[in-house]
Image (tube, rainbow, N blue to C red; front, top):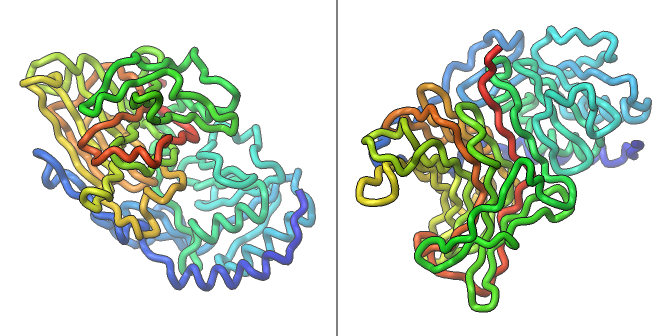
Length: 415
């Protein structure tokens, strides 16, 4: 892969503009706590002192910042690509040290490992996620090991997402914090032509919610470009939408993550959620069973001007004994960091012995104990439903869809 160096002259100018305009990723994001959960959202910033992450780095509850990094050049990289990275990173002013892979020890706190190809197989177990463009980002524990392919795409991504005031900024992602506790039990990037029916199943084709919409198998499919499409449409006088579930109740405590684009239509919502244990059982607790709504997207701008991601726990069935706890993460549609921008965003759940913790783009937004932590296995669900809760039906903008790039599930290690 050989890229001209001319674009790099522009990157420095772009960087200077972006760095002056950069702001905290939560600037326009506001979280309010729902029923019975006041005071459980712990997002205060911590100390910015130097710590175990290494000399020249600072940390808070959400991010780790480094004034320098060691760039490791793989043996497969061309001289031209190597020089392109050196020129680009030097102009960004983040004080990198450059070494070859035979000098790599893994002992320094921050690395950017550079390879010629977009996916480097011998580091596959550290994959953090494929990003737009011909490159991938990977992570290994606290070393923040990053691997990039295409020069222009990866440097542009660094400028837009990881450089602030001449420092590298890394979100404290699940992989970084809990690499030693959990293993990757499921990773589906939906490449191919058909849904993997050894892992997934179509949900029951039933009527859903008060608008009379139906789940229909035809509304869930792969698009051939690495995405699962959960669609919604008005077909022959009937509202149809898709729902896909994991095969059986196969997963339990761990970390669940989806990277997706949300539908931008009122009157429906997309969701990434779990059915754990016996949700219909009534014993006054959520220990025997709970529905865990990691993400429900409400794009109800027509009725109230409000857009938000709903997070919720439901237990003791859905009838007269039903109980729940919930929270909403609100977004200004005009804000640069809105998840309703038509781009990919990441939604996650950490389910451990003490908490259900929800994340958006690597930032914790809510935590709850419910009425006790469920110990049962869970079924994953990705779905769209029509309902008045999400506002007026928007026939002019169907079809709509939840576009899923990948799903990951980490489970607790037993070794």
